[in-house]
Image (cartoon, rainbow, N blue to C red; front, side, top):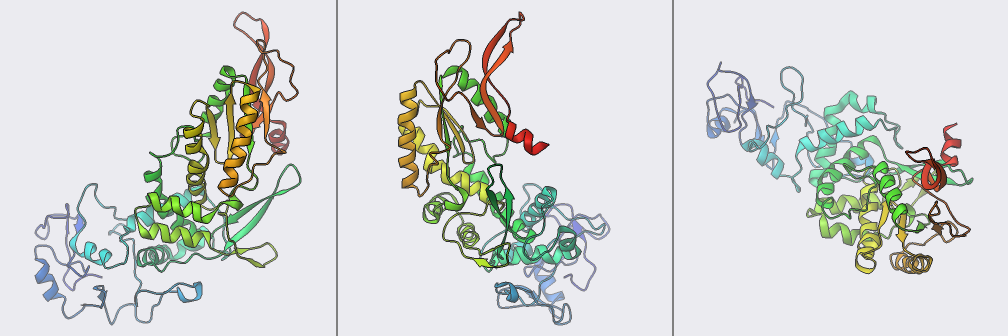
Amino acid sequence: MTCRNEYKLTSKPERVIAPGQGWGRPVYCPVGVRHESGVTLNQALVRNSGTCRPDVKGDAQVDSLHEGQRTDAGHRGGVARSRVEGSVMGLDRRGAVVRPEPNAQPDEGRRQAETAKSFVIDRWEVWQAYKRIKANKGGAGVDGVTMPELEQDLKGNLYRIWNRLSSGSYFPPPVKRVEIPKSDGKVRALGIPTIADRIAQQVVRQRLEPLLEPVFHESSYGYRPGRSAHDALREARTQCWRRDWVLDLDIKGFFDNIDWSLLMRAVRKHAQRSWVEMCIQRWLQAEVIMPDGSVQKREKGTPQGGVISPLLANLFLHYAFDEWMKRQHGKVPFERYADDIICHCQSQAQAESLMEQVRARLLECGLELNLQKSKVVYCADAKRRGSYETRQFDFLGYTFKPRAATDKRGVVFTNFARNVSMTLRHHSL
């Protein structure tokens, strides 16, 4: 909403220029209404006294504009916090999103409008989250709304997300369950949130991830910025050359069995914002729509497929495994990519003992080690010629085992190295 007089813009938030000197950022009065350049905030209030008034929350209200518009929070389980929901992403005259200047103080009106909410969330955070979700090109959730359909009223939809997050009235819709066949005949269950819910999850992830990154263990590689599966594979190959034995660990149904109470204890330790904790709690408790249309309520686990789920999984295993290994077995190197874990040991006895201790540790955290898939592997090569039955393991789609190799002189020798697993080749074909 603008004042009745034509407004001018300033190139810097705290500077007011005379009309005709150029266009920059808008100047706001305390209730969030843009006003003409060169006037004080008090003058702007006087000039706008006939067209706008603050409501009980301090938000500007207009009787003639947006008449009859309401949020659709009611049929989604949320609570509408304002009578009028307008645009969140202010556009300049060229139709481009106006981005706040780096290191600039927020305008007075915008500051008061946003601090009137229960929680302070910058609208630019929602815009950044939307761009990230759009780049990932995900499908629709239970509401069937695709990205092009959401973009038909982009400003309104992003505003609703911001409004409900910042007012504490955001409640996520149910998650759509999708089953992906696995090579062993079983299925991998994925939980697909709606596109709007993924944007909201990305807002929380953008707040929480910078707080957790400095805390996470250096041997954790999964779903972390600046790290990849290839980094984990390179480190695993190096450690296999240095140590003779590998403990290959498999956690049974990890994402479906995360203990909520232990996870939320870790979230509360690092979140620093109550609204982040509140949103994560609600996402964990979101219902699941099964393929047959039935509704399932969960008491543990986080949907594998949600935007926030990988970060929560890393946080849970950071305390359940990484920190425990650091305290109890600080000299045993390992690589962990989400719930795929391998440890490097000096002897068979050390590896077998470590497996029993890891099994007990996971039980304490509500998880179960899959003893049928977990195994102790001997890293055989030209110099390690011991006779042991298990001499290979799979890690992140690659099979590590003794292979024929050629040195720089053309001499053929046996090397313990990796190659794409046959299972991955089968799926590629």
